Length: 97
Image (tube, rainbow, N blue to C red; front, side, top):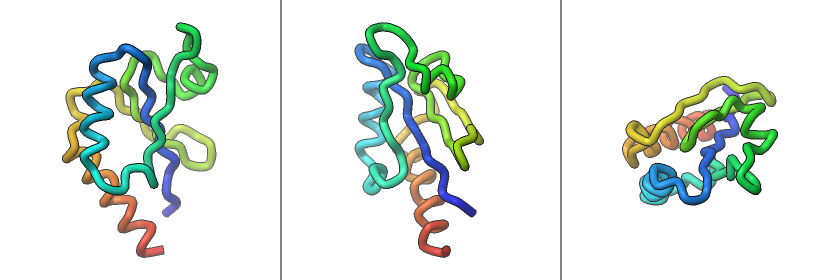
């Protein structure tokens, strides 16, 4: 199983995005798996965000082989426990390869 590339799409001034980044920062090792990505530049959606299917922030998108394999939007479920579980899942995959 390949480890996906995971991007957390956020935007400046987004309160839910700040909450989610705060939850993520509580989890050790997140930097090795999740990339925080700006979804907008100069007030416009970036091509990467549009191509990734991002229509709202925060949105978590996973890629394997350059293809979107999972997408989850909204801040309610992005707790530190959610991120901890995600990181533990993929860290055990990396360790077992």
